[in-house]
Image (cartoon, rainbow, N blue to C red; front, top):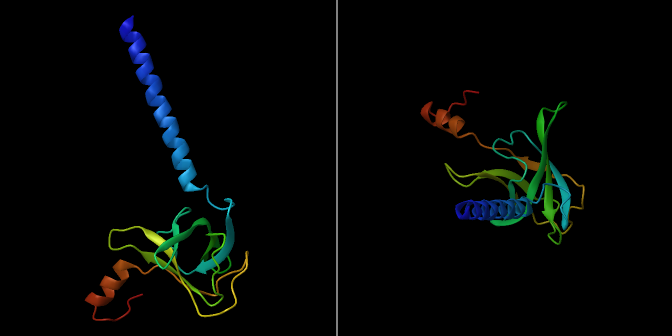
Length: 151
């Protein structure tokens, strides 16, 4: 009987730790767009390969938000991305949005390269200049073929 009580208490402790971990991870993920303290901007990429909902948005290497939603635009065949930017961060109007990688094996994130404009993007605005993901296989193929574009 004593072993049964110990096993029950151990099981309850494991469930409590698992529930706490789940609550912690849900708070970190931020649940995409609509988070408190953010505003939304949009961008359209030729290729958003590797970007998923929840991917980091960085400016100067610092996380300033997360990707909210990705959809395929059926008219332009481009990836329309919703970006949730932390409140208080003003992005110059002529900034460029780039799909970047942390390295050969690293994750993909969205980087904002700020422009020099004194005007800033307002909530709901769209970036006019974007650069999609660069395919590593495509680059290697170009290198091997002597620089000829095989696409």
